[in-house]
Length: 192
Image (tube, rainbow, N blue to C red; front, side, top):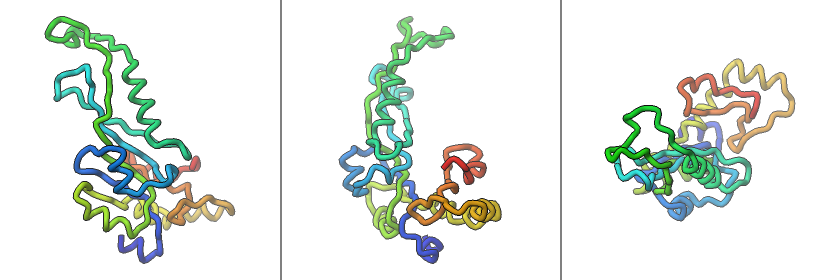
């Protein structure tokens, strides 16, 4: 956070991870969510009510809200589409102990476990001291700042006069996405 402060960055892209799944009410109270457009990613844990085995009935789903949409809509849509899948076992092991074909999952939300969003830099220290939060990590903002100094970023910036900037003041073509094995390939994107 020190380098971000030295660069006078006020709003940072942050990944907040909770110690345990939390309700929407708790999520909104802790983070003071007022604008859905500040959310880049939301991750939640669901339980398959048709699977009594705790070793196999937990699903973790992730969504990336679009614009000003309700940030839980993407998760709900994903959970519904999974629940509507018809499971077709292709091996004998897919038959349960009673010899029955397993039913489609019926997913119910347990709680939210992580969120990536834009936050004021001064809120990070408060969040990291909160008992319900495992870590509030501004690494995506720091990575964006570092990549903005690379030769490739400077070259792209020099070729374009009108580049959209995100809340941290860095151009939107520089993204920090750590959900892929090859995250270093995702820092620069012409699409954003």
